[in-house]
Length: 202
Image (cartoon, rainbow, N blue to C red):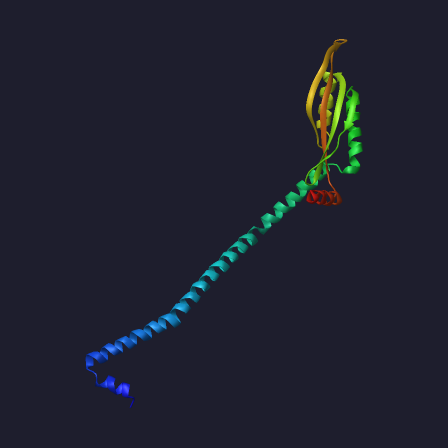
């Protein structure tokens, strides 16, 4: 028999019980440290992963449930874009649009003193096309001209309107009007790429 074991067996009962309790505590501590705590850590990690996956499932379920609505919104945006495209001319249509503006002015009874297109101002996907205009005629003719421009199918904004040389001629109030007419055009893909390259070089 092992001498150590013999010594333990010869000990008083109280000491034997104490040794048994200590051995049990050490075994329990070893089980907690080496088995329970690692498993508990692993379980916590799995719970966190499960919670994350449940969140992703809920989000994807919400998107799937909203898919018909999102498709309708997408179609509506496409229709609005198509409508916007009809209101903004491309580069080929600008000359005819400018000709239309002068025709409207002449039909309204105005004399064009200045009609000077300025340099385009390029934005993200479109460009401003400003034109300095000076016309002379009656107040009535000016009002008709502005109304006709507003009714064009293309967008044309009239800004910086200034009246001068106001006088009465044959019982008609005549005036000279200086203004800035601005229309807009979509940039084609090549122009957008070139503009981005120019911006990156800066």
